[in-house]
Length: 259
Ligand code: NDP
Ligand code: 8X3
Image (cartoon, rainbow, N blue to C red):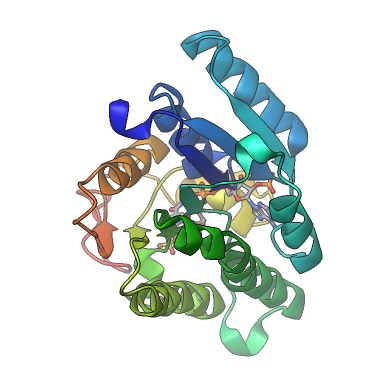
C-alpha cells in the first residue's frame, strides 16, 4: 500500500494476540515494523514467519522490552538505530488483566502489574515517541483500550480502571496534540480470544476457556483490521474511538451463549 511505504510502525505486545495480528496486518504494506515485548523468542518466531510469508525484504526490528520499566523504554526509543528512529505509527497494545477478584479481596501484585503495564507503560511509550512525531509533523498513536474502559463488570474493578484511564489518556493526548498533525485513536474491543484470559487466570487454561464457551468471540485479526482501517484514513480524518464487540456480546456483562 503506497500510503504505508517505508512508514515505521511500532507495536508493543507483539509477541501474542492482537499485537501479533497487527504485525501481520502491516507486514504486507511496505511498512517497517518495530516489534516489542518481553518474550524475545516469540518475537523472533513471528518475524521469521512474516519474512517467510511476505519475503525477505520485509524489514523488522525487534525490541525485548518491559514497558513497565521507564528507563528501559527511554533507552529503547532513544537508542533506536537511525533508520528506525522516526516512528510514524505507535500501537500501544501491550497490556493484561490479572485476576477477577472482588476489590476488597484483591491482590496488590495483580493491581500493580495491571496499573504499571496498562497505564504507566502506555504513558512511557507515548512520552518518548510522540515528541518526535510532533517535530516531524506526522504520526498516529493507536491505543488499545477495551469495552472495560466504558463499562465496569463484577471483579473487573482495577482492570476496568486501567482501561478507563487509557480512554481518558487517549482523549487528553488528542486534546494536547490539537494544532499538530498527529492523530490519536482508541480501539476498544470486547471479547477477543487470545492469551488474555490465560494470563488473567495465571495459566488456568480450563477457566480461561470457559470465558468464550458457547459464544463466538472476536479474533485478534478482527482488531488488527480495525487498527489498519483507522491508520489508513486520509490525514484530515481522526477516528477518535471505536468500540468493537462480538455479535454475541451486547455489553460488558451481557453475552449470548449457545451452551
Ligand atoms: P495477549 O495476552 O495475547 O497479549 C498481550 C501482549 O502484551 C503480549 O504480547 C505480551 O507480551 C504483552 N505484554 C504484557 N505485559 C507486557 C510488558 N510488561 N511489557 C511488554 N509487553 C507486555 O492478550 P491480547 O492480545 O488480548 O491483549 C492485547 C491488548 O488488548 C491488551 O492491552 C488488552 O488489555 C487489550 N484487550 C484485550 C481484549 C481481549 O478480550 N483479549 C479485549 C479488549 C482489550 P510479553 O508477555 O511477551 O511481554
Ligand atoms: C478485555 C475484555 O471484557 O474481559 O478487555 O474486559 S474484558
